[in-house]
Image (tube, rainbow, N blue to C red; front, side, top):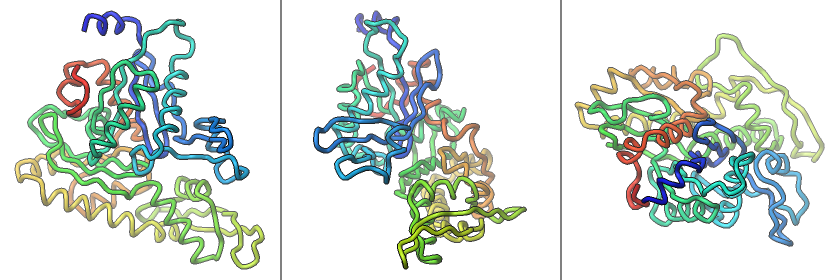
Length: 348
């Protein structure tokens, strides 16, 4: 405890949003210093890490057979421990660039999915420790997102957060510093991308990559009808003759492509509300639902959810960084961290 207090004066503690698609790192007193794709390029002949983050993402789908661009997280949990550990080490070192040579190892707050198993929880903790963390605190992602969105999580009033990330969507009702009811879905940004790839393949006989699908989603994707229609030129490989081909897709077509996934998310929001105690549902009707995560940026999603649930819906400020902003707030407020830290981790 004495050592922790001593090191705490000199270490730069970190908050990490270890996402399926992107990893964000918050440094105490500095803010968000890293926002890079959760991708690592590995040379399979030598097991050498060639690139991490932005540089590795550029290699996806373009590497020779002996180089693999690996995503070490699947659906929000670590699927490749060694690669995840090396990636965390890279990000922690990068976050400490320019600091004193003998800077003490940092305390780290990391967001974890609500339905994570003990094995998966331990994998995150061990990877962070092996990467150089002095202490690791695991906080449920929905809780960190709610704190980052400025919601009163410790009060006896309900707040509902729908966190739509890359690999998972978490629907949580929070009250008195804990999650009362929740649903964790393996449907999120990646599923939207997969829907778009499948739609373009079936409708146009063209194969496109995940990066192109993500670009389409960001540029013209929507959950409800837009005031002005949008379109985009898409390039891919013709599945009939194998040659490059370009087509134009519209927002209406992309809306059709992702509509089934949106319906499933909305249905699960309704199911979560049905299993929530009546007193808390009354609070939610009064205060509304808050959307966080990259998926919250999909045009018209808030309106679609509000229309289906008859509850006010708002998108958090900067929803992409709500989770990591929450970890930063927890680093600055040890008392709040003590209330919301996930059990079976180190004691504060």
